[in-house]
Image (cartoon, rainbow, N blue to C red; front, top):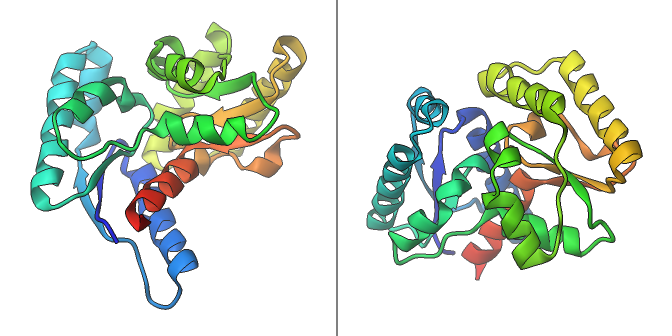
Length: 231
């Protein structure tokens, strides 16, 4: 079993989900008392969020690179960035270490390609929805063209993530608003799937909330990381 290096704390709410999922998958696949072999670097998310809000992506990249290098020195065999948004600097992080980075969009894109879905809705932070680092990888590598909500929809999704989910607050009204947004985009945009493109959204939504396929990036990323670790 190889050691998975997790860059977490962005936020810790979803990092805790990664920890649980990886250990559940290990127990499922290996049986008995087996669990995943992990190293974790966990940020103080307030510091990272301040860099995001200020648009200081260079400063954020320096932090991420430092974390990846620390995990490699600690004996990690791969790097897993436990957040979709911070894959903005995935190339810089990958280039700073000699171990592989397991990219969250690749597990997601591969799962989408196994279905007939080709126009999924991307629900994520404003950074992930509005910048092209994530959508472009889905399209260029996996031939999946994700669609994003309109400005009001993006405001809603982003606000719920930062003001509620990252603080451990899960509200039925926010879930209903997300479901209404997806249903509307099915009608108006011809959307045929939903990408839970922020790792916290798995705290709010589940596949049975919708009649179209749901792609939980947290779960798909954890599975991809375990497959690498298991060899």
